[in-house]
Length: 200
Image 1 (spheres, rainbow, N blue to C red):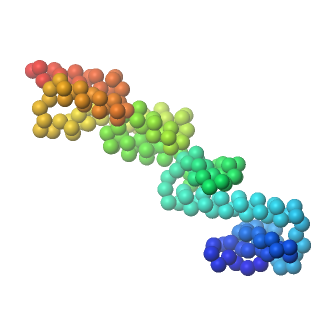
Image 2: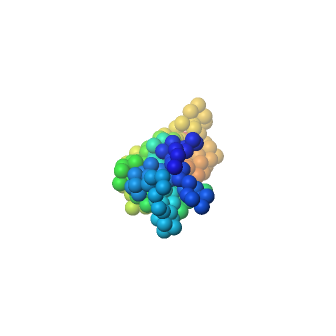
Image 3: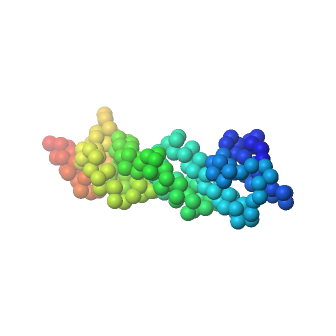
């Protein structure tokens, strides 16, 4: 047995037949391994599985230590290069239990970011879905947004500074708002007010 020169906390175990096991210090202590110990084929397989789980947990902890992610994203990252899906899901659940994955806080950050950037509820729903935030959290998260009508009005005002408003401009603004995830229910009242101002 010897410590790995390339990976910290990794131990290389050389078996008599020439096979090499790469395990973590956790497995070394848990299985009470020492040079010259008898190791059955079953125990060697169990060690490999345990080491793979430990390695996946370490990768998951490293991922969530640098940024917020949903459980779905953790699983996708861990299985991207052929990792075991069950072990990845187990790791995502473990990270959630530790508090390293908090989907409600992650969803709230997404809502704040996209609503501040001028996006409407439809687009924010797409982002929540794309990033794997559970659907049962969506309504509560979206209720934290400023009213969509106000956000649509702010967007229009930001695009109209110093420009003459006319029917063509209003049509373009309406299309832009729809692309940004606002519904006609949000856009209509704002456009009607602006049309009344133009007529006056």
